[in-house]
Image (cartoon, rainbow, N blue to C red):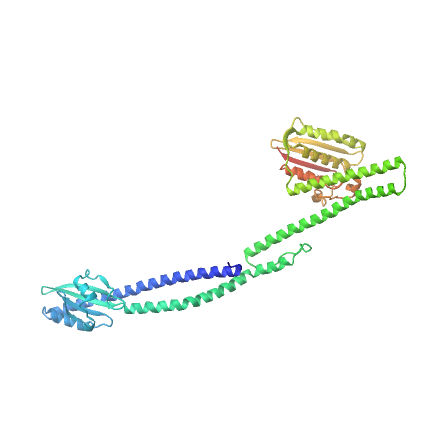
Length: 462
């Protein structure tokens, strides 16, 4: 099997060209053969008309003497390659070339069973290639007279032989030229692909910012190059996200681990009292809880990325879910001097994963409370439409700058110092919110201005 694409394309091109040339040669040969025979038949009809007219004139001059008229007609129709003969009652009277007159074989059969007047008849047994003949019927002195014009097919066969030789000589020559031309054209057409392959081999994980440049190529190659460049852009973005994710995750894990290790080193440095050990263990427990929460978030996001999370769908009332979330965080808001307001509609039945949606609402409320200063206000509202419901969480915090807004749903992203690690978050809450909303075929949007608070709106189809 041919592995080279260039060789395959050349072979297909050569096969197609060969088939086309053979078909054209067959068509040309058949057309030429038919034209040569038609030309010979036209010449025979012209000569037989002349011979028949001459016989009638000679018969009138000879006052009905058939042999004399036949002899004069034959002697006057001595045309090269054409035999003119006159038969009466089945017997030869005269011929333009007596040496070529054969009373047996094809001519005898033609005389015995003559065709219609002026009709061309083929004599396959006359000579090496056969002959064509045409007959005129006449009656003279009570005798049945046949005027025959006959031409062998030797000249036609010679011309067709020459055509066959030309075709047989030209065929390998043309196929050789076509094969070479096809190879060169294929090589030129595939040159951009070779350049693409060379450039692609030079792109590694550290140089995904590079793009393929194939210059002025065909539209199909340009489309392929553009698709490949788009793929490289997506890979570059994915690699950059992964590198940033690994760096951020490592940093987030290192902080609580350092605290735990430091507390353990301090506690073990010398003998301490029960109260000091209890204080150190409480710090270790808090940091362990932070680690557990971070690992759980990372695990959930990893499962979401791999598509292994299956929604546990059930029917519940979304207004009850929102009310429970508000009650759970009201103490936290009150401790920070923040007013938590929940505007809840009547019963709102919904079908979805209740636990994931509870986490979505809790993350949004927790995020709003953490970044709203004392004396501020956090509002939660539920709006219902025939085909969707809308959860709206707003705060009066510092807001988010417009240039940071597109990135707030990225993992470990923090817009500014107001949203720092000191607030206890990891930068994963909004990523989980976005994933849960999209898993329910919904979406989350942010509207915010600096120093004017932020509004997160989650729309879920019912």
